[in-house]
Image (tube, rainbow, N blue to C red; front, side, top):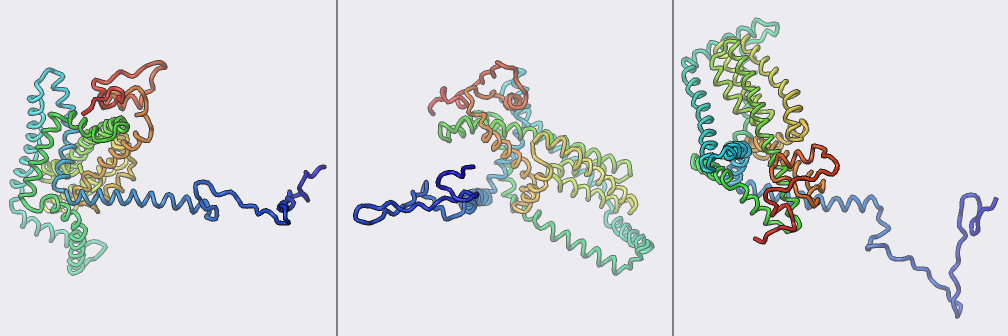
Length: 429
């Protein structure tokens, strides 16, 4: 068997090649070729890769920090604007339905806006009046319920004394006050005074009105701020994000309604007073995922303990936990997860991060912001916007085009206004 020319042994060791002699008795020095792109070959490839990722992640983290800093500084403008965008995601389809039935645009916007404000004001008024009517003799009832609870705990197998019960309740109150500081801070950051609250409310209504009237033109103006080549990607990502935001708002109303009906009906069946205000409170609190319905459900348990007895309060607690389990294991994964494409673990993490960063506003906007960013980034990364055929003008059509398989040879319809989505037909602003 031949071992090959220039090799020795079975392991393929090459013979040492001596430098060729030059005239005059000198020898040439072999200089290795320079490393490509100026990369030092003495640095391991893994370390070079880690360094490349590190500086890019640092730049991204710095950009996110700057954005969060600006949001905190401009929170009295950003939060009302986010509220207006979230509400408009619900009302824009309603305005579209009315205008398609030949309603004037101004009348359709007025009906949608005034109707929404009337429903919210009616719910709040109903809850306040029933709470005021049912709170007569509240202090006497609270004292009687507290004495009944102490007697039950003393007679239970735990054999708790009055001093131990008082110490336990004092520690529980201190823990609640400590844990609620982040929520109180967030609430005060929204409206540290009545003037800030009224200003934010007027700004939200003003923004909502203009989004309903001229939202398409506003979006075109925003898209034209980007470079010409990036406009198709920005336009398509915005349409996908808007559709996801609308889906989130609709599904959140459905989830909040189910929570309110479940807990309110349970309170009515158990004979807990103020069942209707409890349901309204649960409905409004459920717009804050995970923590909202739990906090409002705890209010129902406290009311049952004050106006009934500890046994009814335990049953009410069971009803609240049952509704929360249905929401957490059925509604959130199946309905909310399908609508916004965010894993339930992601929902929990972004809500926790929102609470830490911004309190109640952070918990309210954490899931929709995460869902919209997820869909927009996925759309840009998919490269669908590079297609010569632009997406449908309507948000629903854009999403259906991505998820429904089309027949071979079927061409997507042209949009109603392709001045942004089609680079060839762009108009100069």
